[in-house]
Length: 75
Figure 1 (spheres, rainbow, N blue to C red):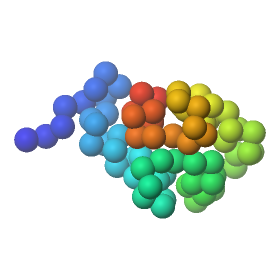
Figure 2: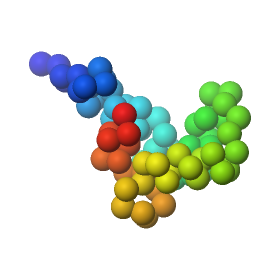
Figure 3: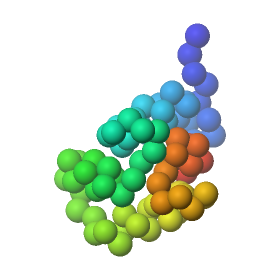
């Protein structure tokens, strides 16, 4: 048995694994500090404003962090 890919070509399992890479404290949400840390570890230089914009784009419930469901919709 394997996970079926969604329209973007990634399976839900692939997306969940990517989410786990960002959810450093394993609380089920990704916040600004986690995004900044992961992107910096990948050599990406982003400003706080760019990170805030990423969160605004994905954060449909307005709680200031990204849940797995919001992350999945973004993918």
